[in-house]
Image: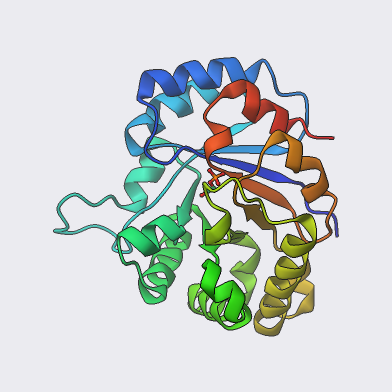
Length: 248
Ligand code: 13P
């Protein structure tokens, strides 16, 4: 089964609505590949980004949401609101959310469930820290994956995208080598296979994230279990991001 590559830019807490529009206007003229190009933009830029991306192959999404349908949760955002603004997907459980906002596997699992109920594609992010890599990453990843997918029914398995982002490679310039990324993502797929069966797991996209740059892209994408990438810093400039999108 061939999985079409998905390339997601995660803008984190960068770019106003006007800057998002400017970026998308430029990027549209630079894409020559037929990869899926997704942008996880700040909440305030979703509406404008969706409008600017209309008619192109660029898909707009968000970086977080609450697990409740709606309610008295000051400052939070609901999946139905993201959908209303035009978001098609949402990043969940990013390591920056786990680290700075103390999100637990349990909370992330509830968000994955809610995103599916609200009709938004969840992109579940998992990854080990440097010390966890040294002491054995398998258990940590297995727990993050099994817990994160806890409420996902087998028939919905391919509606969730898994993103492996080693914490030690995020924003550090230390991209995992293609060998390390492949070995780890192969392991992630084996965990999915244990849970959902081999057939389902083979059609589930697994993305790699962590210091992806135009120079590292091609080698990563040659690996069997790398079905796309999640890009932070290098997704902020349209020219650099287009070089990643247009990888050969
Ligand atoms: P960098 O590409 O800046 O390392 O960030 C990766 C990331 O966190 C994407 O979600």
